[in-house]
Length: 68
Image (cartoon, rainbow, N blue to C red; front, top):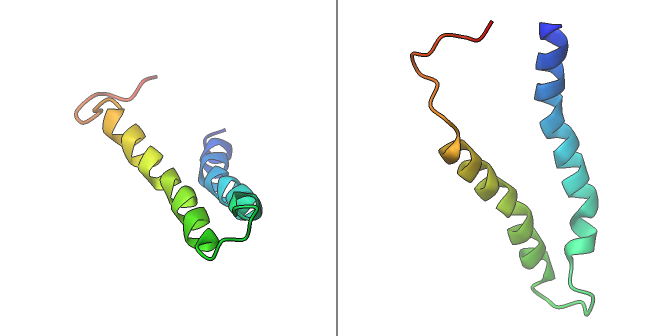
C-alpha cells in the first residue's frame, strides 16, 4: 500500500507536466503575435508560483509524530 501511494504521488507530477505540455499550444494568442511563445511560457511557469504558495501555507510538521 505504501509503495502504491508513493508511486502515485511521484508520478502525478509527470501527469500534470504532460498535460501542461499538451496544452501549451492552446496558450498561444490566436492572432500569432511575435511574443506568443514568451507569453505561453510565463503562464506555464505560474505552476511553480502556485506550488511555492502551497508549500508556504502548509502546516509545519517538524517534531510532530507520524499519524498512525
